[in-house]
Amino acid sequence: MKNIIRLTYMAAIALMLSSCHIYNKYQLPDDNAAVDAYRVAAERQDSAGPAYLGWRDVFRDPLLQKYIERALAENTSLDNARLNVEMAKAQLQGAKLSYLPSLAFTPNGGTASYGGSHMNWSYTLPLAANWEIDAFGKILNRKRGAKASLEQTQAYKQAVRSQIVCGVASAYYSLVLLHKQLELSKRTAEIWKDQVATMEQLKAAGTTTEAAVVQSRANYYSIAASIPDLEQQIALVNNSFSVLLNTYPENWEVGTGLEVSLPVIADEGIPMSYLATRPDVAAAERGLAVAYYAVSSAHANFYPSLAISAQGGFTNLLGSIITNPGKWFIQLAGQLSAPLFSRGQNIAQLKVAKAQQEQALNNFENAVMSAAADVSDALVKYEKSKEKHRLVSLQVSELEKSVEYTNELFILNHQTSYLEVLTARSGLLQAQLAELSSIHATSAALISLYQAVGGGR
Image (cartoon, rainbow, N blue to C red; front, side):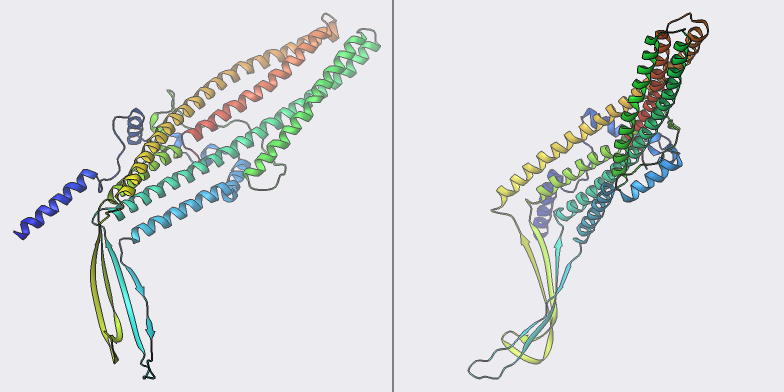
């Protein structure tokens, strides 16, 4: 009869536990479009894709590589992310150690005299052990939640690392662009300065008017005035670059190349599977796991806690009698604590945990959608920047011919006005600047794409 009662009791407990899913592992929820897309993506990860490329494979400029290495070594944001990982590791270690009994050594002694009686010293040298039996999954869910939290902080660290790598690369190529624009503007200013001298000579020879001289001089001043603006922008970007490298402002040396290339880009776009490697998406998914285990822990709070304690040691105090020499002793005890008057608080905690789980799901859905939009944006920018660069390059080629022809017609044959020369030169400069910008825009789109798929390893 006793065995039947025991089996019935155990079956009832098992039924209660299974109904609350206390021991179940986290799984992605069903019947959710964003989650289903992510699940399929996670199952089809392609290790040959751009998300798995190391940043050295993408950014091959030696100077840029040196700057990225420095930023990764000294940037405080990445250091804080690393410290967060270390804290999460410590919390996981603490959760694992909760399975083991706690030990405490608390020696004590004392003496007393009443009415002049002889003072006899008593002492106890106990070693106490306490062990919480994880019968209802409280420790298990804390450990699983701590592990998911560690994985979340590791994903955040990768996200910060990716931002730093791509941030340094973006700032670097912005500096390269500005230096090339400054070089082009200075070179053009010199050409237009020479043009002023030529116009003055033509006026002295009587083949042109003062109006043409004034126009050429104004044109030179216009281009010369753009040079301080470019120098100011270079100084500002240098300051931002210094912040990324965690140092005081200084002028940074840069190379001359503007182009960046990703070795692997799918013709039909970036597959959805690449989003599964994006660190902020992975962090949001791990946040959903943390919230799931928080709900499981909140469910477990409704069930009793079972603890076993043991105490043993050496003492000379046996009851109220002091004996010398002392004797060894051992004590065993068990304790079952069931929540009675805290049920209302447990219900409130469960409601909070469920609400936080819904928030985590919303955050995860938003992360997946935002990641897909980022990748799509970067792809569109890349394709359109390439198309624009091709067209602007053709424009520059034609305008170079136009400047050459109008110069010949004006200076040698006097068959055109200086206004046409001015228009041709202005158009060429603007096209040359636009060509530089289009090259930079294409590279910037590739950098954005590399970051959008979780690159920067």
